[in-house]
Length: 567
Image (cartoon, rainbow, N blue to C red; front, side, top):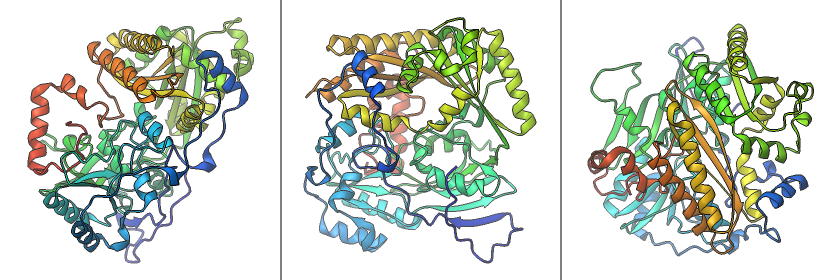
């Protein structure tokens, strides 16, 4: 759990009051401009991991680190002096920034093409200025000014988008600003209602620490958890790793405020309402294309007293899927549910320095009678002591009946400790000339295996045809009664000098396979820029037209996040 943030609570707020106000006073961490996270958290690939990669996909002849920050090339800022002066008047001189480092940090998110370009010192573009409003009033004035001045606005939370969601595209506008939300970090807790209202720039760890100090949790832990903002989670319909139990962010958002150039949309946090279509569902997932989420009212829960993370092995992916489906249909699904296929299981064990299941499982290996393959599932349970014990017992009984072999807590605890570490591994793979990318989808149980096979085949054939045969891995997570998500990871040797083209070919092939075989184009990464051309495939021309009509009402000048969602 993150360290509790420094907070200031007004002296007039007595402990007995239902509402308590606070603010996270720490400046949120900024990630490395060329990769994920912070240097202190990163580590080099161990020799056995490099050997595995060299044998299976190939690596570069020599490591290629990112260029120095001073060597990153940016085009000159083009925003007018009059607009800069007006922005400074609204938010203060210190909160309109245009230094080289600020522009680089806000030049891209953390998708594969973003990182390839940044590491080479050639970002596609950069914002002309970075603007940091302090509250909703300043935010509204900034948007109105930008609409009048033909300046595009790209909302920026933690900068964790992997689908081009924060790319500083200006479209037909005269300039583009990055609207950094980090100063909107207020917290208000209604303990009686288990409702917490936060500024959209508040980071997930800061909220979780604040709630933990009061015996509560939000329960939202996406892989980007350490850096993501709550507004960014809502804008992209994020799904945390424990969503099978806690639900995705869309189910946590009870009320929301969104500032748009034409007006502010304020939706009160009623527990339920039949007052027409749910406008919250339009704001959650709007990706900054309609306006900027400024405030969220979120459902909190009592923090779990007990946690248990188990491992289980299945002889095949098909058998594991059948077991997870049975758990979902029996309403016995765990809070964390993850089933790796054979290839992902093999690579995970190899990168961890585990060469056989015997190394990993000890005595449990004997029960497998020399079996070396298989698929690893992680089953996580959270709640009251007796509740966890009962749910765990029931779920493991169902796993055994489905042919699975529970192997104790060691694999589950190992996953829990490293659950946010994968993006650091991606940076290391890029240094060694290896493309690594992820994509995700969801479909019905009846279609899950067919969809997985189609996407894996599309990636293998496309990258193989380019002379870089890949390892394609997949896991099931985020269980629902009617289906589940599929999360793919593929790695291959980079085609030197054609890194972006290689990625684009694979992305296009996988996206086409998803749409052709009954999957959603994205389960939780959002549309952003990378998936924008596929939105029509999913919601139809009429659906796109309806969204465009709403955008025209809220953002008539079209300055909000051009090129994303509604490209």
